[in-house]
Image (cartoon, rainbow, N blue to C red):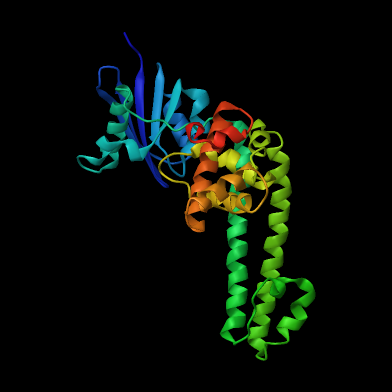
Length: 311
């Protein structure tokens, strides 16, 4: 008798709905548990047989994958965008868990891999770096907005430099506003220090990965972009990755202004009458295609990859 059990989990912040289905398609157990490691493991350890588990990609996916992997035969993190069957019928937790188990039994789920622990540290450092960079940009914008609100022009980056701060602060006549600017400068300094610390750790961790060494061969991709791409490419799909898109665009801007094959490609687009903005976008797309080839095949960058048939 086939002892395989298909376990669908509908995971939420406070509770997780679980449906267990046997090889014949019969639901043999259902439960709603707290989304806590001890509670979920207690449930799984109480099951016998060949255990196949699935749940949807989301906030808890990586944590739950690592939690369950040692105790079950297979863990499938599925892509909800491709699970069209989940959009039909009643949208109840118990039904969703049953549908996940049923789709798993029929082999109808698109999986998203979460199992490489070798990239976990690099991934978390990349997230920290990107988050701190965004926070830093917000604080810098907030600081300039403060000066602008008092009619003080402050273009460029001089307003952020520590050696010029006394000069800038003296332009604010209102004591309360000046104090607010001082606090904003303190926040700016703190974020800059944190980002530098994360940057050092990010670069050190990225040197352990073969992928970053390959990606750095592509013109316009420095050590930070290589480190960020090495992580982001693992989630590259048609659902769109905003951070990765930004990285490719910035790489395009840099590559279009530096000598090399990518600049030659960019200039050839301009020569054909393409507008600079569209040429940079086309170059960004070409860099994305080349990056994927280099990363997936483990090959070195070659200018021949710029030809249409190589994209």
